[in-house]
Image 1 (tube, rainbow, N blue to C red):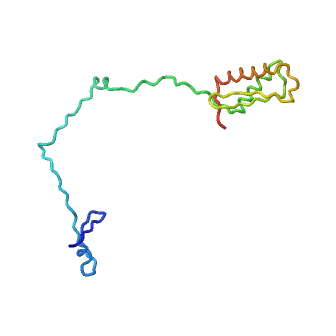
Image 2 (cartoon, rainbow, N blue to C red):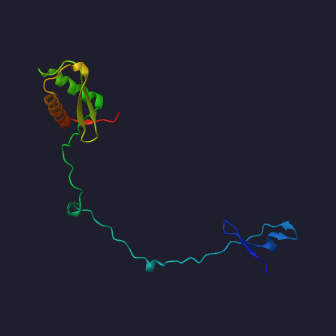
Image 3 (cartoon, rainbow, N blue to C red):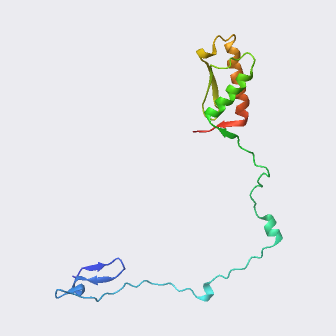
Length: 149
């Protein structure tokens, strides 16, 4: 019984047909598929749908967008925020003019830490300066987000 080969293109051929007497042959046949024919009587006619003002008013709508989009906070780097807090601290009358270093850290709810360096000399109330640093940071947190550098 001859063995049939089916190519990628759907062509069917037997071994004898392809290699008759050692010579390649080109005779092939394609398989047929049954096609269903629909008569005109079986087709359901479609009705055109009138688009009226009523249809448009009854159709679902997306919610209205707010007219004023809330603005995001301005981004500042940690170094910029620290410099702003150091500047505010320098304006305080009991603050040393040098030797204060502010470090800003965190992410969404960033924080500020005050380090009093030896160059500041003797500080009468260091806790007061730390409290001021926290107050300045809180005020700036309302306006600025920490930008990743």
